Length: 218
Image (cartoon, rainbow, N blue to C red; front, side, top):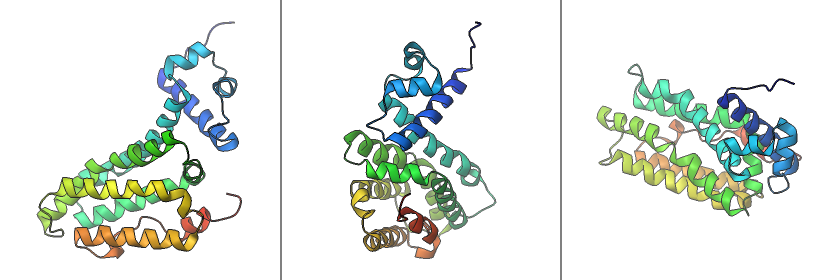
């Protein structure tokens, strides 16, 4: 039988898609490399040509989600047609929209937080990629007079680190809806006051997503 040669990016996408499905169905810890091989019809050599481990596949899944958000918001970040407030609203709206499409994966990560690798990847890899585009928006806001900040990049970096540090509490917060809402509200309040804007300008999560996060069986 003639060997089918696929574009490396296509093959990597197949591995990511199959692995994400397996992680959600079986759990990250219970999924083996053999499971991924069966799902993708790859040999061990074929798999290790693209990824060195199951952990690296998970890292790619997380990174892909964030890159999708960055890509979707890049045009608005670079646009000269919108002010910084409009861009900030759009950024959070798009982030929320894409997160909704990955809600099961988001909840899965939270439930697996006892795994140190997941804690690291979920808290740092996701949020640190937001620093550059958000700081660009905030810098524009400073120039336009919306934000009163001396160091836009550093301020955004601190805010992002604060947000990402809440990942250590995520599993705990997802066990208590009222506590989760209080923390989200407090985070919005801190962010808004730091930037000197109304909390209405920031939408990190909405009621629909909250209800789905706490829905039985999801």
